[in-house]
Length: 467
View 1 (cartoon, helix red, strand yellow):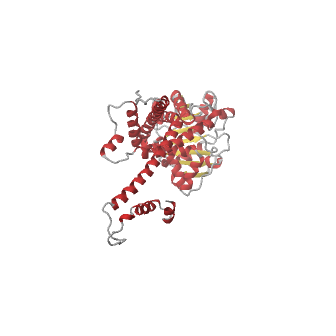
View 2 (cartoon, one colour):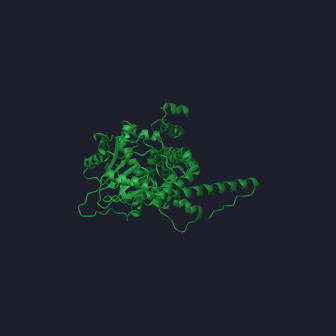
View 3 (cartoon, helix red, strand yellow):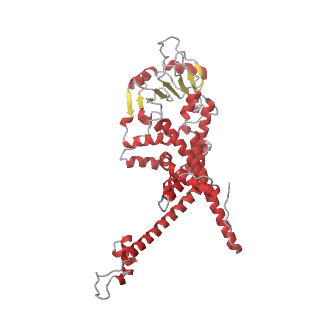
């Protein structure tokens, strides 16, 4: 076998053909004429084809068996964490819409038609006098009735009337706290701040394992023999099933229909979880990595949103509470940001700690869910000069792909329809994890039953677990 394989240059299929030819060599010659190219039995070609197909089929079955055990091992190891991340992913769907719906009663009211909005410095000064702590961000929308959103961290946001400077109230504190708690479980299993690095390593590893499950699943779920009946058995739900048969059917059907959106969601999660995966995006696109210094970002290196700054027990920015940031010199840069993009829908300013740091504006011309509608403007606070203007069109290919992956993970890139697809895929992932765990448990139970019966010397009884 090895000699034949070497003669064929390592071509396994050609070696099989040569071996089958040698095995049938006695039928190649006509015993009457001893002609090597003479008579061959009619079953010669069929026998050689059958032999090659049988060996190739065994090789394919061996590969399927290896993938199955890899799939089963990863599923048992990461199934519980995958189930938790999937459920929290469903709960995080429509987060922006739900928060805005909770704030629908807060509106800015112009005293007279054509009234002008108050300057930014006046709004921040009023909030600072009433609240005591300096804000960490301020966001304005272009709508005439939209209030200003003055943030003190992620959970504490005050809504201010743009015409009178009056504080209208707090923006859905319970709703924001709920989503923040769900996101903490989604990203690091609800671990406290000092244990989040370990928890994030666990969720990252489980997310990477889930990607391998999604990639190997279709190969295992597709029928071995293609026919209408076999395809229908794995592609559509069947009624009247229970126990293992029901879980088997659900696992296959949901896995096939959710494979593509799950691949996108999980792949983007891996890129956000690991620096090497993030760097790989830039390498594959032949792009240079963006700088991560303070001058480029305007507010320091990019960090997870929930751990970018420490907060006190009230949800306020603890770093900002220690030293009051200067609010002077913001009016002219804000006007410059409004003029930069005439059709802006929202402008957000992350207030720096101090009076000399650059001002980093995020200008959005859409609803906030598409990276191609976002631009970054960095201005010098003292002179108002443009330090950096970064529309989406100025990004290199790697940064564009990376930006899209962030919003593809939540489905926001496709609007409400995209968020719906992501939510359905996350719900499907939860069912996949649940049915996969139960199938593994039933498999283990049957194996223990057979083993116990073999040790006892009695025939094993086929038992089907029911739920």
